[in-house]
Length: 251
Image 1 (cartoon, rainbow, N blue to C red):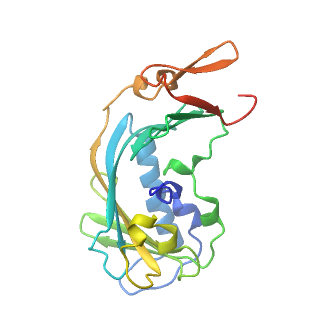
Image 2: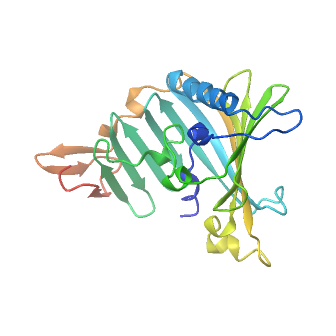
């Protein structure tokens, strides 16, 4: 899937912030970065029935404004429960149970409570690879109404840098820019359009259309996807043609 690399990333990268460097005119203390990221995550968590859109765009690092591909995602978030639709994939996690829909293949994948890796919930956890990256340098910048947290990794792994732009008035993210190794990003249809060796690619994630109180529990309830009849799980309309796969034998 062309968007699979995106689903690994989490906003709460403040758990990685260790150590700091000094840059003129910039606050780089560990505590400052931690506080900004914690306040931002807490704000998302506290907002009830929050919906927003994300537009993903891809480019070579050498030409970050010349986008090669893009896709649009819609998110709903309420505490630990969430739903999102991205390309041909739909994911809902409600009261500990997660449903993944692969619409092109008409497949429904059910994951038991606490069995779902939470790396698709960008407010909860990190991809395990990120947890083991060392040598990261955090920088906090203030520019008018935009507060920016920049994490640089020195080009020693998949990630070169990740930058978070946060609106100080609303407390919400406006953009995440990630510079990653290009072989982790491009699907063949995009990669073949690039001439020469492009070591790094840019992923821009632009956030928009924030609305609180935009939906109710029904939009997150996994009962709209399946029901249990005896020991069998059965998909329900309009997903009754989907084949169900279980993420654990004792689900």
